[in-house]
Amino acid sequence: VGQWLSFLLLGTCLIGLYEVFENIGTIGGLIGTFVSILTPFIAGFAIAFVLYAPVKKLDTFIRRCPWKWVQKIARPVSVFVVYVLALALVAAFLCVAVPAIVNAVTDFAKQLPAYSEKVIKVVNELTAEGGWLAGFGLASRVQELYSNLQQFLTTWLEKFLTAEKLIGYLSSV
Image (cartoon, rainbow, N blue to C red; front, top):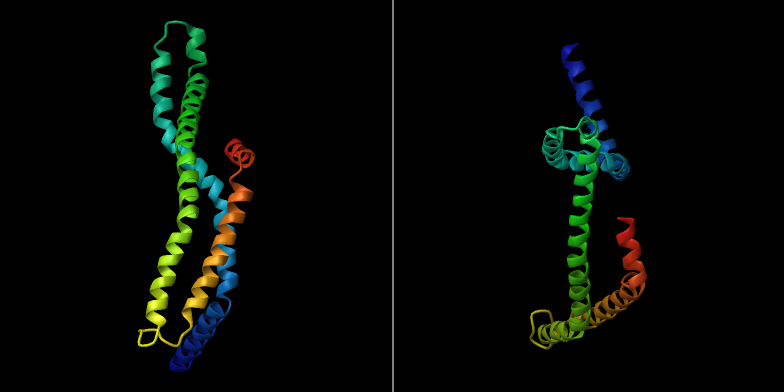
């Protein structure tokens, strides 16, 4: 009876493993949904963890004040001051980072024709008679990929990198 039960358990485990692999997309979707639900809580925990020490230090400093009414509001004032400073740091970072990112993407889009010409030249050399990739017809595929990438970048730049959209993105953050 023991050996029969072992085979039954092994068969059940194999069927279960098969079902897991058969439905891996659904399982991945469930895990993704679970992670997306937990993300705001994890972000809030991280922000609270990082800002706790400055709030505590400022709270201790404010409580040294001899006036009782200041001591009563020490914690809310310290939280407010630290939050304002943190938001100012984030805003300053975004004011520096966003233009740099926009310039990098714009420069990349401007340099894309030169890059594609180099790639097409190398692919043409490799697919020419006697080349390593002769007969695969990769030159036309690279040209098609380049035109699709150029069209995507142009559409993306026009759609998302306008001044109104950037202001909207930054204000939502």
